[in-house]
Length: 436
Image (cartoon, rainbow, N blue to C red; front, side, top):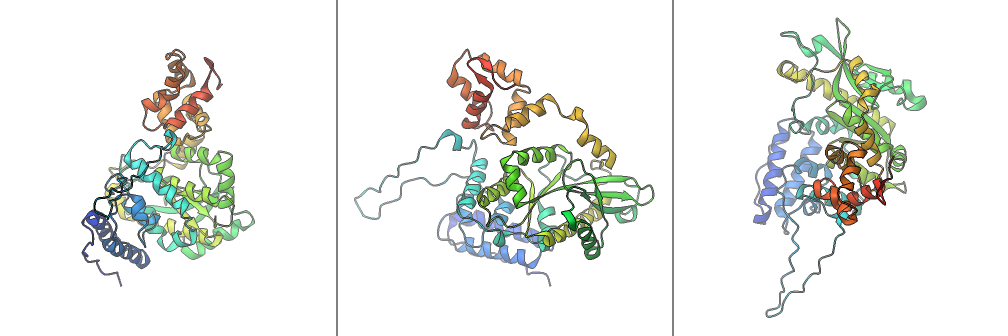
């Protein structure tokens, strides 16, 4: 039986009415999508505790302190959360005639100052979750919720809002025309467990699974035409990382490079699947921070699994969700959406060496600089597409080192002061180009 529609509650503090309203509206809208009972219960608990909160909720950091509110709930309402600044005013003194003690505000280094309220909210959320050592076991979105978490992410913020569709003849139903096949990379097949994994997914979920050498990612989904056998790549790609491999890739920069390749492959829904428990590892905090950054700041859908068996189930549930999405939207969007690439076109797009431009190489070099994220590198190459153009801009400042160090920070809000200074130090030393 479907959960009952939640009723509006009285809010203890007027300051929290807007946040409570957002949670209630989100819960009601999701019930229309038949979300699992456990997720409905999570939202009910979060809403009830927000209504009862005795402290004002002004930031995402404040909201995360409320019992029952975790990163999953934060992600749901983050885009709609009213932007506001933390309350840094001195506390009021309770004794009459005495002034409250003035709080000395810390002097933040420029590297830690975000350029706008949205990035501030995201950054403080990441810092807080790391500090509180959120465990995977309490926040893992299990396979039962994979359908919801993957497709509920708002696709309207992606320019052309609808996902690409394979070609459709008039009055043709999706499953009449196409068979959806999960394709796993032949380097990704779980070592000696490969054949067993494929067999397990197929027998449990009754979906076809095949193995191919993929140009990007560890798994994609194709729609194979039942008559012509033409294969169209659906708008989803998954990158699977064990926690051990994720630690290694963070240390040797493969982590950034792989995400950049995923962003450039042309598929809209980017899924990052992290397998295993990071808590026993010495680098568990860096893994948790990387996951929250990947999801909250970069727009990936991060799926977390406990091990091989859970990963198998997640692949199966994702496949069923994708089939359901295309079955529902095929007749509506096939004539107005982008057309899916064929598999051969997809491989060519990802592998064509001409696609790697001078700017792409420059961006990859920049991402090796401390404090330079993918977004920072992209912002820099939009201003200066090549190393030479950036060096020329530095030379125009006639040796004014402070101005040169601040130049990128002054030109783009996406480049913080620390990144701006580090890029200058890497590129320009004593009036000469250092990076070649």
